[in-house]
Image (cartoon, rainbow, N blue to C red; front, top):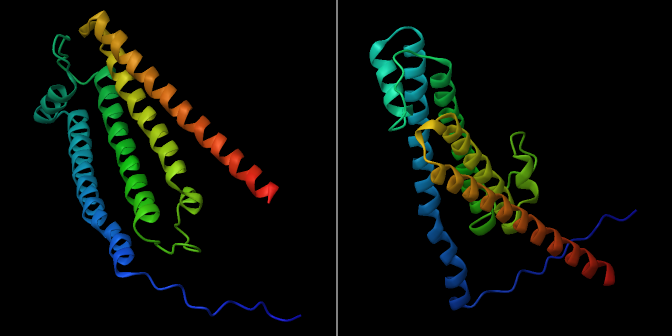
Length: 205
């Protein structure tokens, strides 16, 4: 059996204007580097909150005060010790940081791969599963799902301190969360329609 032959025809040379326009995608690089710095800030914030939680659990008064200042909502009764509700609020805050960090990773890695340059991670043992089929549409859907997760955490924190909020605030936050859900469903439905349309077009050809 003869080996497959690959075309040795060089790619068409871009005109100077086209080359300039295509190279302008690298202007996004500082933006992604900035998001990496933001990720570093979130990592630092996470460890500060975790250190305070461990310190408060071990009886450190300063750590307890830092936690209570961070999680106590104006108008709510301020606890005098580390209780279950306070621990839950702190842990939800940590989960919130992790989910936002995951969102940053998706934007940094997926956005760079989609809009700037290929990273050539094929075959790498740590290649994210979702990166193998990422495109602008998939990235939007995953970002929408991540935002819903973050919104759910914030809504749960609000419900835990429901007594400190007015009915109008509770209804408004719930409505905003529902809008996020509907937006994600609309994005997923649009992506599904586009995928089916592309599949039909390929079958017709």
